[in-house]
Length: 269
Ligand code: KIV
Ligand code: NA
Image (spheres, rainbow, N blue to C red):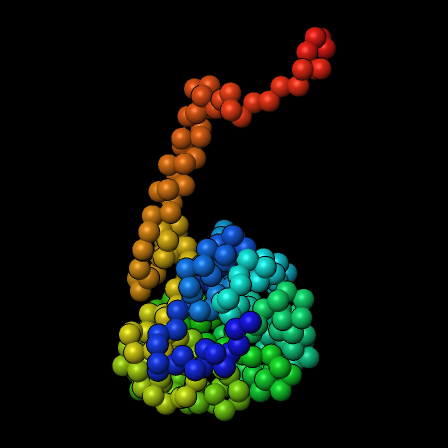
């Protein structure tokens, strides 16, 4: 079973690869492809649940999909992304919600969109054996405050990110996602902390990279500017489903090889 220590040993030695997945079949494919970390992201809200943003995603929705991914993945570290308001307001409730992901669903760690309010919680979770991945820069659960624009483009905000990164490292976070911040800031954060940094829209100097599965394989209708499409799965699905529809409409499916008769059922009617 992978541990957060295995991941930390990779930092600075070889790039860490992380990708989201939201179901068992995708998790098994991603895992077989050799991804180090599978994030069951609350990006499932936009990516597969049909919401406009991540705010409506519930703890039960994430839990169900964490369970599916954990059952589908053999080697990757499975990280449960804690949804909006499932953590941060009340410590006991936060601990219970995070713990459920490991105890009931089979996650190896949780991720929290981070800020000053997650430092003490990160420490408490570490004390209890729940590894926490921090997340700074663009944190989409705060879209109503920040929009989706690049964050920390001035010195004051950049210094705040560096100090929050250090505070979360000191509190016991095992890794840090940096989303949509200037590449030269991500590079300095990576130097400032010993825990691995995993970037998304944060340049090439982080210890690893993460993207959303549906963006990478070409399944998303819209992708952020920093994503890259490495395949055309939407096109593949459209082709397969179109062929199926045509085959049924034309009477070509099912064929002889798909049909079975039972002799004693002749002459029933
Ligand atoms: O929900 C998600 O997919 C994420 C990653 C983009 C880091 O938080
Ligand atoms: Na997320």
